[in-house]
Length: 118
Image (cartoon, rainbow, N blue to C red; front, side, top):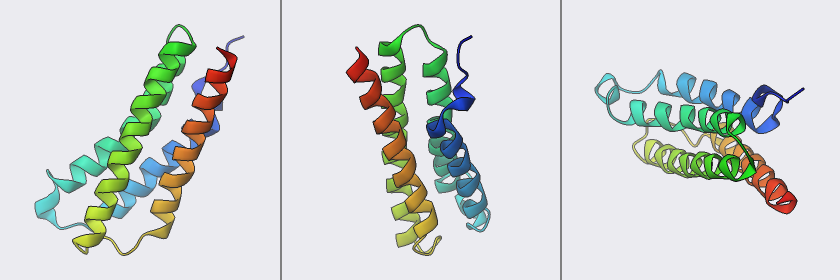
């Protein structure tokens, strides 16, 4: 039986990250609804979505491609969090930044493991 993407620790923690981002952005100014809030949420959702999509594809190379996209979204998210901190929309969110770092490590570790098997 084929494993499910839900079994992956990287996907599970990425989903936790999405929840944290949505919660953190609830207190943002209303005028950021279609700006920074939207960008933060889309970048965060992109991470578990790309992990899941890559896992459902045919083969390790395609999974690696989607893990690369997830890694890019994590870098985008890190930048957007830094901007939100600089604009005083977020305090220095160690939990949020720490979770981004954790998920990045999991995604990179998963990709490295797959590359070793190719």
